[in-house]
Image (cartoon, rainbow, N blue to C red; front, side, top):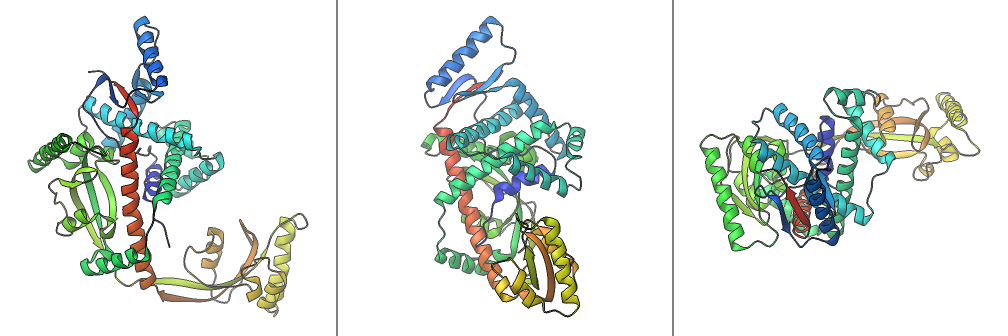
Amino acid sequence: MLKYVPRLAAVLAAALLLCQACASTPHANPNVSATAVMNPAPAAASVTAAAIAKASATGILLDRVVAVVNDEVILKSELDYRVAAITKQIQQQGTALPPDNILRKQVLDEMIMTKLELQQAANKGINVSDDALNQAINRIAERNGITLNQLPDKLQQQGINYADFRQELRNQLIIHNMEQQLVSDQMHIAPREVQAQIEADAANGNANTQYHISQILIATPSDPSIEQVAEARKKALDIYQKIKKGADFAAMAVEYSQGQQALKGGDLGWRKGSELPTVFSDVIQQMKPGDITEPLSSPSGFHILKLDDVKRADSKVLVSQTHARHILLRPSAIMTDAQAQAKLEDLRKEILAGADFAKLAIKYSEDPSSASNGGDLGWLDPGATVPEFQSQMDKLQVGQISEPFKSQYGWHILQVLGRRQADQTQEYTRNKAYEAIYARKSDEIIQQWLSALKGSAYIEYHLEN
């Protein structure tokens, strides 16, 4: 089954726009100055706070602390840099900026959650290697139509330091890896759930419908009191009334939302109806683009949703498949790259002169999965092979044999034997049902974990009044 990874998609999408990626779900609180929240401070945090106070009193502190997060701090210079970046991002979206003190609090909450997640990742030994980071940056450059060498200058033109960009992307990949590990440890999807999802989608038309949704979330703690729920409900209702009277939804999201996309105007992007919690999908299906819901209750808090757009896909899924075979030679201590390439050039000439491709594949190919079948790979879906192989395959006419080319597996020649349109509606429907359940459960697992993570942390705010 395919697995849906919306968090990484969001990270890469942000990177593709050449702006800093959003951090994890913030949990905003009223503006507090030098006030401890959550649990009693660990010894390290107490020492840190004491050092901050002493340095401030003697006037030797060159950079002021704006928050203490367990045994680490966030500096005013870091907050200023992040606020400047987010301000530019919001302005580019054409969304009205909230008052400066509110924006700074929203951004600080985002930074606190990122700090908490990175601390957890460090405790678990989760990191991202330079090679993995460089591969991600290479993909970003390619998708922007520029070279890796051009990327630093492109970023600099937008006021983004390349070293800061690398570190921000590394942090987001670390967080993604940790969250995926968390989801993997807790995820279980039974076959009967997939079948039930397929039947539900068929009944309500969600299987091929996507909704572009924005959200304002007023969060509640993981185990809220009656008073906390009532306070959150009242705040959500107040915001809803402001929007009904003409306030801009995106501006209200930036100012008040405690969801992970708050600083992007609450934009959740395109979501399949089957990926939404039932309490949302039932309402969304009855809405028209531009409609806004009253506050909806969930274990995370109260949600105000806006339906931005709807699109429906064809119910039948046809896939262009290619039937191919190949001969693979792997460079080794006894065969250099040049020798492997030359040998395949010779084999290609033999085949063009009338030799049997299958017999030569059986004799020479070093692909253990296809050599015994004469190099036959069967019918391949788009994307089923590595990019270099796919690219060569797409260029060939039926019956043609490629020149030798290299992939991560070695050197190949390949022949296209046929092409066809295959009806994969049933398989597609099952995969999409699985992905929808996976996405929905992933969001729930991560949101509950984030709420518990913040609930168990020591956090001090040192914002100016």
